[in-house]
Amino acid sequence: MENIGEKIKRMRVQKNLTQEELADRCELSKGFISQVERELTSPSIATLVDILECLGSNLRDFFAGRQDEKVIFKVADVFEKENGELGQKIKWLIPNAQKNAMEPIHLTLLAGGRTDCEPPHEGEEFGYVLSGTILLHLGHDQYKAQKGESFYFTPATEHFIENAGKNTAVVLWIATPPTF
Image (cartoon, rainbow, N blue to C red):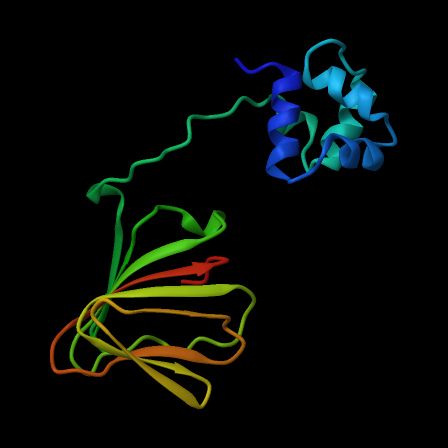
């Protein structure tokens, strides 16, 4: 099991904070943060609560114990939804990805198929065309991408993808934050 100091250091580094920045936020000294992280001293409960609050956590989550993070996802983990009207099939590659920072999907579009038109939203979107040719519609603009090409955009306008060819198109599409 990870020690308190090691866990605080890991959380601080994940937040891209220096010891001095964390100390300033918590109204503590850099030396104290350093000693806590090296297990040379232990913070009081009140001080630990303050440190965790500055790191975006709390006592319950801190001590809940980290469940083993799933790294590999199998075919059985994939959730699939078909929409015959739009000529599309979406496979959510990571279960419950909506709780993550990004959401990857495997999108299949039949000839003439398309996705729903999505309204503008925060975040970024990336796609890689695995097969076929697609048209990416961003507001009034459209961009053509074919097998081996990728796209990347900030979804500041309405957007959707349509299959521009006569064959099935397949796209690996990743959105952050999750929107699919």
